[in-house]
Image (cartoon, rainbow, N blue to C red; front, side, top):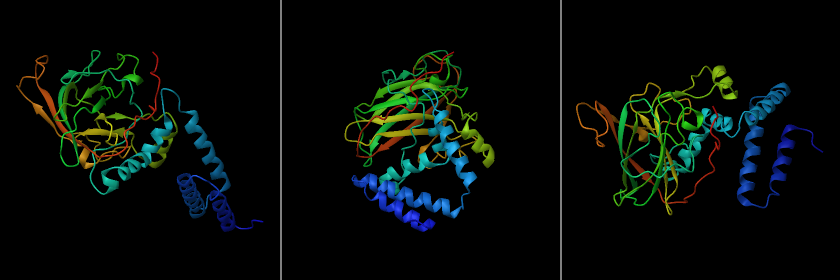
Length: 301
């Protein structure tokens, strides 16, 4: 019979050893160790435990086909960024252009030719021309890679959050050429607040933190034989670059926007000043896969 907290933890760990799958056994054994240690170290009270259970239930209740509070919480606690960093950059030992997936990726972005536009409805904002390369760790170009691109409007809303935007606005799917190169036209992204009308908002208020993300463009690089890479390229001039609420900014992902004054826009469809962004993604060998999109439904008007 069990009499003490230590005896209880030891018995639960003993039961975890019954798990046949080695990886599952490792994960759940360590989960029990750290979870029980946390409860002991903070001397969690019964009322605090009941509150914690209620909060976890709220995370699920506040997630649906057009909003994912669980993903938002993971980012706000730095867990998403930690998982990314320790699984990329040669096991977390080197800088990497990999980053968090984010909740707004869609699997079916429209195929767009290199040099095409992401603008699929009238979208205000300063125009940007992006030149991008995908290379391996030795600097060799990665040809025929699929690259999905997506970002928010200058109101801080992705098209699947905003019924006013056209379907697939500010989204496109490209293929790299023999030099690992592709290019496109879009608008300069803006920083935006993450939603605070749920549990994540309550947490941020309690911790005295702001809810802003710095401006960024999202990318997914996919090809057989390389590790699927999600990236977020951040604007070097954003005021929230150092204090991103989702802890996503690394030095390797800061993009240098260069303003082009009195220069012709590459597509000859824009007049006035514009911005240029050149960026190179470094990918690693590994498993290629396409995850399930965290959000599967666009909000309705």
